[in-house]
Image (cartoon, rainbow, N blue to C red; front, side, top):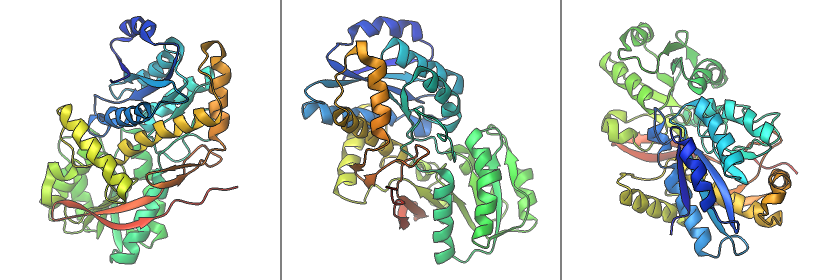
Length: 394
């Protein structure tokens, strides 16, 4: 039996009626997700991953005999709605903690609401460097975009001859712009890749990228670094190839979307990027992938394997379950404020072991996670290299 209540950005009022259906003897978690809007490709299956974890934990007896119930809120990929989601999940549904918000742009505004209310939020995708720094209730079970980019560039340097590079990025998207202007330029420099031109920005909804690519192709580079999610990366790839680019498209983890090869097939061959998850790593990742694909099929969604943000959402549920046990919470709504604080305090000292190995949080609330470097070959993801998680301090 599924223990989920869905809320949309357009149906907040109706969600209040559902609150009465939540039993007092259940653990309530919120899910602040981007199921629709421009982040749909990466965000729509977060719910699938969370459902799997909740079903597994509940089938094993729940947490101290009480079942988990998740209340979901679809932001439509709108940062303003992510802030509404945080308030709704915390104040109207009395969630103990929140999985999400999804993106960096959403987390940037929702974290403020979480701090004022005093509720832990753990995004599974928001990866802008330093996003949770100086926040008391903000944690992230996703790897920093800068760290993953540098891991990819280190692998590239060790295995591929690349001396020159160019950068293109989505200029109107928060994290894409940061990656394109602040993360990639020093990253390229650190591995000895000389930029042949200034980074070229383009609007997310741009139809024609020929002017921007033409500037880059005046002095064709060995690699083009792309700061964009799936659709933007595909636009750059297609236009660059149309203009005769024969090098590689590289990136951090922004366009590490399993749907990439579904969209462009073997045209993506040679692309190299980072991912926070590799489905064929071990028995645990393979078992999760099998369950994930089967659940998506039931929901009418085709999937080859989980996005790293799906795996991270799955892990967040198990992490919170462990924290609730370790903090010896009761779920008593009259003590909700103190129990939310207890979750925060326990998270700072918890060491969790999941599918990808040990996970802990640094002083800025960021999880230490491994990095998997992916190369597209023959229209398929292949493991190019991998980097272990940084060690936890203390």
